Length: 384
Image 1 (tube, rainbow, N blue to C red):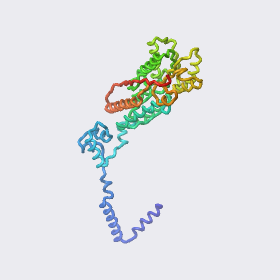
Image 2: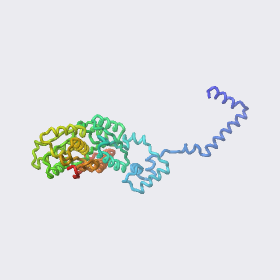
Image 3: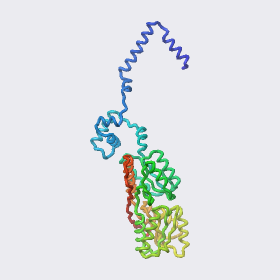
Image 4: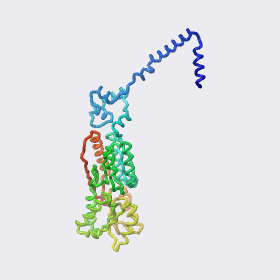
């Protein structure tokens, strides 16, 4: 309707006598009175947006207790939690998420950066443990995959920081040698905990396995079984897990009287992707090894595939071992001897440590970093 028509209708409405105009106005007033008397607007006028402070005053408890009770924190007395929730429902309390986010500069999200998921059951199981622990404390996890790329790992860490992640769990990519992005997260007040793939000397908490001991025990088992010519397919040596497993292998050779100088080590910088070249080099040797010890299970799977393509029988012609305890070691023929890692427990412990550090950070206290080390377990199967 045009402005001209509106004015015309308004003018026509009042083209009656003075008495008529007074009567019309009185009718309007009576109509408005009836609307308000029915309470159609009263509720809106009286409505109050209750805050955590209001709830704490009415209940006689601290604001932090109210906040924790609303988030179902286990450290709040069940009766207190019930009282808080009952009052919140009665008053139709709604949390101001924007205000709380701006005030704390944090979210309830924990970022998790892993190298890959699809080809490594370890990370899938670890993520299950992480989510189990995070959920208990009211956190949600955001999974980021670096695809074994340092550049992508840095980018993901920046995204998590910019989106105010409460903390970050990270397993380093095979390319990672610089740790400035981790230090930048810390400097921004975002706690970081490394798991599985750690970094020696870095001032953050880490949850890892004893890779040195695991590789030592596996090498010792092979030597005691009579395999005195063991080739080792390592990962990139900039990865601490690769270096520690290599060191465990070398130390076992030394302790069992083997010539370390004659150790056959093939570095697979791209892990399973470099197995084909490593196998080719093995069979260029005048005396090929009797067993190939692989840095992880998927590498062992690829090794067995390449050996079988050459018409070789595992373990009669050459034995193979893995490391991790991936379920794939029970599916392939022959089943693969490996060192089991407690992936779920590692993930859960890493999440618990991070959540502890997040709470300390919020209270502006200092918590010493911790290194938690899990043991591996030898699982002997048909490949040896």
